[in-house]
Length: 295
Image (cartoon, rainbow, N blue to C red):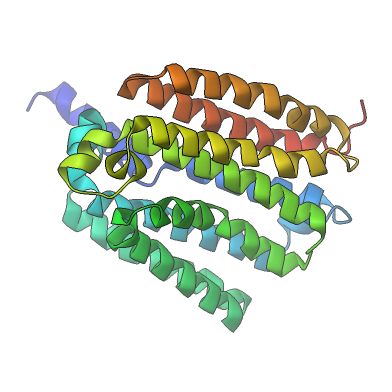
């Protein structure tokens, strides 16, 4: 091994770890939880009040650790099909051995338990349920027809219910936001199945494209994305400041995504569509800070 290779190896291991725990997604999750708490769930509280709230901080950390562990266990069970669908990503993430991945998985969940125990016994039960739900999805549910997509979308929004229960805000506006996010994630997840068809078919995952065909799957993805427009319609009836424009532009943006979806025929195009929806979710997260900015 050359000296330059030795110098690059720690960086590659760090990059492998970041990819393994989906570091980008975790950063977005933390940002989304803080913005949601500050501007939607508890607008009467200041930033300092939230930042110095140790129990709230513990919920954020426990959510991040559990979700990171979830990505690891999901990667562990999906290794064989990822070798087909994403060979470069597979090579990068397996710079860390599967044995070390499982050790990291256990450590992350253990620390999540520690932070949850600081809050309350109910918080421990919530995160225990979350951990088991993620493991059951990766081990069994992911291979099941249709249920896997619904289950995955519900898991993605569960950390937001953790802060909702803590801040005790159950207004209709909260459910509209959750509904919009749920249908966006559901549509994205179905498009992701189109992207991953080859590996899913080889390893007998009963995803929508495997059970049906591309055309029927596209109709289902279209239906799910169109359903997101219903909560967005009710949301724009509320005073949302400059965030109003985000929901107003959701219809033309998703229409563009659907036009591209029906023209898509290969894995590369499905990846683009998956990332377009992911980008729109990120823009939505950032636009939460504009709720009290008047046009």
